[in-house]
Length: 616
Ligand code: C2E
Ligand code: CA
Ligand code: CA
Image (cartoon, rainbow, N blue to C red):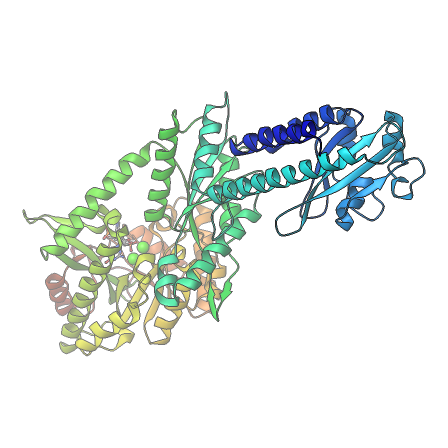
């Protein structure tokens, strides 16, 4: 090779390798390479194209050709008769077309090249180190001809340089993909989220919604079925979330946490609709290694334009909403509002108060009688948790309800309550003060450890009290969780009674009555309150009573405060009731004394001054 040519090629090589080494974008390197090649071979017009994994052509550089030429070729599939480049890529060998006008391989593409004065085209495949064709390097000529010897040497050097530059570009692409994607789910990861979020926050007048999601049951799945099932569940949840794109982008932030950025959510309603769609994605059970799991996510959300000024505030607010939802609305969605900060503070205080009371043995069961409205007899009691302060003041459950959303507190309270209930029931049985039941309130969190059945049974066995005396009270929301509903059904199969508490405050769906085996429905106080003033309300209660009667489900009206309410309930056929009109909740000793003195007979109200009138 002449010395001049050798030094030209070596200079070209140095320049291109340096550009590659310093991280120049592949398109720029390719452009420079074409320009230098055209300087060294003045009659050639140079182009470089990439071939993707699907075998589609994507022109990268062709500085001497109009842009429209590249645009027209972009996305064409390689094939045996796809010009010089498509054919070279298809067969993996150089293709020399000396006359575009007559060559069969150009029959479909000649109309693109000929009007530009391009008469011949010689294309060489660029291969990856594994031998896959990743691009083409082409020389076009303005007269029908093939390459010269010098051009062959030049192209050999250029193809080699292209191969290095493309490999480098591919490695960078993979590294970038790795850096911005989560390996387990394939979703964008925390870094990608941070970048996109910051970008959105800095864009002028940008409005978007941010949802933070947390899986509800991953820990139990990991603990009981192993980490590989847990990983499968995370992957499945990621897949289901990504399926609801709706213009939103889903990220896995780590562990069981996901985020969704939704540019289309401009108001609270659209954010809630999206959250609802994401939650409903979890409805279908997921089967893995012979296990069936119904995934569940809890969501907190904010809107960029209304729920926070700075990026940090917006994130914190979304976190607060999620935190609050996790503790008060698992499996649901909470949109941030400033009042949440106070609720969270309140929860922290109540959690601490209840924890301390449990530590110091100041938590007691009080009992509120459930009476047969017609016969004026006490038929059962509901146990309600109370804290006694150091000053002897009694605090009702309603005042520390938030403290019950802490799982440790919930576990300890349930143990403490069931122990006292079983002991009390033993005493009443021994005295012949037969009650049909003692009711225990349970929340979703009580079912989370999965050992509730054993714990209830152990306490009742300890006092030798048959489980049929135990009535468990759960709300509709609690039964919405399929796993909990299954546990409740098992408890009932063990002989316990099941009451649906607060009926009318939740979904109030009558379908629950046929889906879940129940013994009692407790009509919420809000219904009883409006019974005398709201005709529709009376009609609903009446219909409910008649339906429950047909299904052999008992009805208990809660929060009866007046004789008029009791009378009306009796008229519409409600058999059982509970409320201040009869008795307030009282401590264990008082209730025992009461049961003894009445021997089951109930007076009219808590003061006990008037006898019950409508008694039969
Ligand atoms: P709940 O199960 O609906 O219990 C009835 C609540 O209404 C009780 O409040 C009771 O004292 C009150 N109440 C009863 N009759 C009347 C009435 O005529 N008028 C009015 N205004 N109120 C009446 P409490 O004891 O503060 O309990 C509040 C809630 O805390 C309960 O609602 C229950 O959901 C929960 N809770 C109570 N004890 C426990 C427990 O041991 N475990 C769990 N998980 N939750 C409990
Ligand atoms: Ca209750
Ligand atoms: Ca209730």
